Image 1 (cartoon, rainbow, N blue to C red):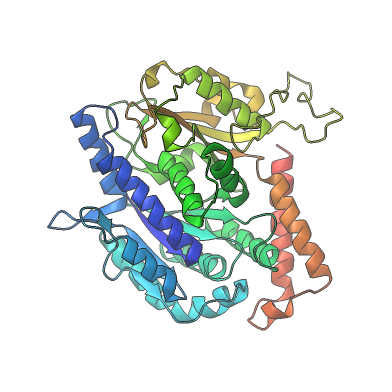
Image 2 (image 1 turned 90 degrees about the vertical axis):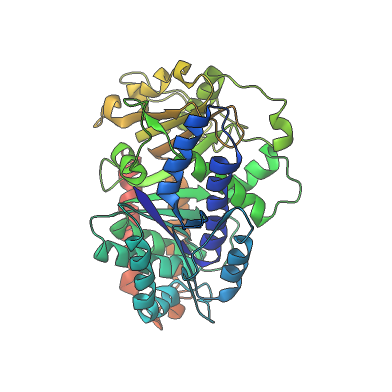
Length: 453
């Protein structure tokens, strides 16, 4: 089944290019340390999901590029024209001459209605190219104007026009130091609208990815391209073909549907995060060896201690024993806190994957009491290596991992709103004070629900 990707705004288009480039490199440039037959099956599955094939054999991304300024789209289209690789469709982009000025209201209330028909017509044309549609993968930021405001509007339209197709929004969490003065307003409005119209929200945090580039990839002068390549690596590790634990003969055909089934058992809990190990520089890769026991031990501790990457894992945090609080909850160190999960998916790729022991992820203490581990934990795998890593493991988790960052954003936005700071910039484009209040109420309920796990 095919996935139509919608790249929105500067952030969404730059990341989208790196994602498709990662899919292509992994499928067609890297042979995966396995048999020719296995590689061919892998390539066919990837192509069905993410690419159309023209009569001349050229691969065309199943994607739409949307931005209100032409610069980034033109740059992206230019980068995707290298001979012998992949490209975007000739009529798969929509851009205008004026951006949204980092104002969510302008993207949502002005650009959205004004260009709704043109954008949705492009969506329909892309959907018609699919033999079978799995759903939509929407890449966007939540702090700016076009990606967040127009992104929320387009997601709402996709829900209205394609109610039986799944929608997953991949959202970039802004740097904590701040990118724009009103990023907290934009974030609250984005998340509250998406919570109503999207089936799942997959978050990646700029601060975390920046640390991975600096500490794990050893990049001294970190560019947006470096950050986007790490983001693309994480997304590729989720969406590239895998087998289920029950069927090791056929690659999964409905990746979005399977993700939702495994990770979103209740519509009130739809925030997903991703952790991927190992992630090291290409220069170090040739001199590194990994065991499944070591990788999974680290990945499990990253989950329960809510560590963002391998470096700095807190090994003192432990799951609670029956009837007792988690170690660290009553400690003098208030930062120690056990991360409770709704559901987890571990994806294993590489050599001897059949020998990996995932028993540690089946511990009932990791999960909320209303879902048994047999339903809350799933594993996908393939013996084909990913992106030159002989062994790699990815965790996609629906857990409390974003409670504190979300609470901080809501708190900062509320403090600004209480002073009516910048509110007039939104009301003049049709977003009323009641819309802010509705957003605060919804997100405070989401925070409370996750805290009560």
